Length: 192
Ligand code: AP5
Image (cartoon, rainbow, N blue to C red; front, side):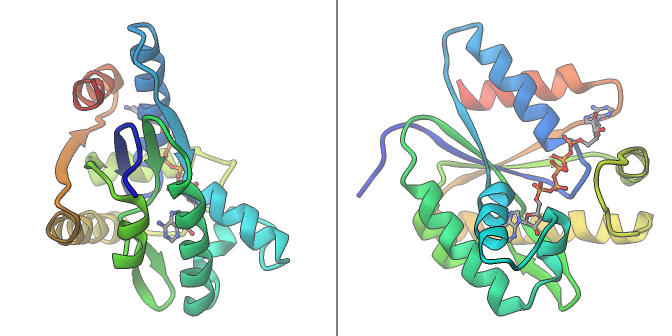
């Protein structure tokens, strides 16, 4: 079954500012009468995992057993697939787990979500590091410049495989310090 509306998946390493860019874009497009709903994949997973008593905090999810993460991931994808209209799915290209990078959209998730466009939000590693350090609301993994660089590079490789598997396009959006407006304008161009 094919759903009505555009389905855009937005990813980026933790703290790159993807949620901030999404919120700005939804507001900008809303002023033009273009309506998108933002769906946070992590929130869907957290609702399932917390109902099952597996976690009490969203930052605990990436530490769960690999099989459990995959099961919860699949359930979240199935729930999101039922949502109609233009949607933006705020998620991760890959999740850094103790066992290595976990694909955020393995084949069974792609099959459910059927994305039209896959977006990678990126910026310089030192900016991401600073943003993580200033965000006291989250329990971020302690990671340096090299770790963040490797994660961003790995995400580009995996994004190529998502394009091959699903036929979606891949768009890279830069969300640099003091230039949030540019990132929002680029994202709005993708979504119009
Ligand atoms: P999630 O909640 O998506 O975690 P996250 O990546 O940490 O997302 P955030 O929303 O906290 O970061 P962000 O990059 O959006 O940054 P923000 O806009 O807040 O996911 C939680 C968990 O769910 C994951 O850890 C994983 O376990 C699980 N999960 C999710 N999807 C999954 C999947 N597909 N498969 C398996 N597991 C999955 O911005 C950060 C800061 O930067 C803010 O202070 C902001 O003000 C600032 N900022 C933003 N833009 C700028 C700018 N241009 N200039 C200056 N400052 C800026």
